[in-house]
Length: 218
Length: 218
DNA sequence: GCTATTATCGTCAACATGACGCTAACGGTG
DNA sequence: CACCGTTAGCGTCATGTTGACGATAATAGC
Image (tube, rainbow over all chains, first blue to last red; front, side):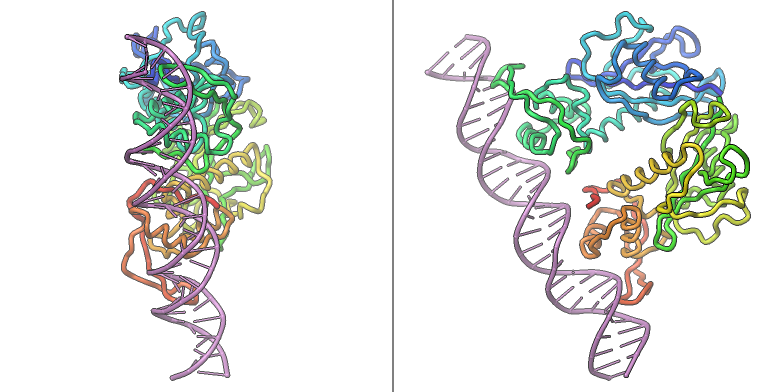
């Protein structure tokens, strides 16, 4: 029985939801895209193994965004080489200035999730589950901020929702909802100009862990 | 690397939330309560292994209630005998007329979850996670019906919520909410007398898989 | 200045919710 | 059979949230 961890790393770049994929260097599925992952060592916890892989493959500090266990996949035929069970972890990360360089898998790159690249093993299913988990968590938790840098505008936060949900949201209602929710975001007092138009206030993450009431998908 | 499945089987009996526990016959933790579970066979999927254990330990058909993967636990020291990773499954079951008899584990019995029995391994944590999952799922899915027999009254459904959430709900508002939600429950046309008082209509599960809007905990 | 653009505040109707009054329909009791 | 305790189910009302959208503010570019 072989146990691995696989990572669904999501981020938002260029206004698209992207996922970190690696090109497989060895069979099976050689040359195809796959989720990054690796073996669980004898002495480490599952979350540790996932965090280690995250650092190795991307140089990213797991504390930068959000990190949670997604699900475990163990269908008998999922790896042609034998019985491999994998514990999938989901991470939501801000667009990182120091990405994949200098890391283990030079073949790793951010790919638009909507591109629908064919994936090795059952990774398409794992990715779909991760995306759905992310969509759901945006509804009832303030985790959208995990996609944002430490300081951000309400419009940037709204773009996260619009990107993950593939919808458009009313800027005025969104602003009211987010600034009205207890401890979702807190103002820094600063303001900035990101695009054209009136300067926007800057916010940082609040202390809330749940959104009450939820911000439901349209 | 040893892989097992453990089961968090919840049901409501005598107006209490109860969990199926077994007395361990062998060390470690001999004589203590533990969640039922067993090894995953080479040829079976994880959900299959969990369903097989469910049948073996309780004689219950997994289709009777609701069944889902909960999470995976693999801290290095969680089993003193060596590295054992366990995939936990959660089942919500109606109060079954033909329970544990004639099954594998004669030592299995339903225990009130509130009793706070000390559990072997990290099973207290797994049970707590399962209970919390159940509480959360009642909010935004119609899964409360999984605790009910095929036909039930609104008051019985309300008792499920009150038991799992440890609260009291207003019978009138609950009735309005449940009967007003699309496809949560559908009337059978029959009515019955369960306690004292006016006879109640009988309902069966509807086809909905999500509750919209949610039924939030007070 | 003037315009395009974005941020933020306000307004209003529709809807959902919590609190609670009221009537209906039973069983039990004198 | 009248009466009462009990539970089911309907209606009402004040309150809070949401969606749609008008209005104003503050910037860049021309």
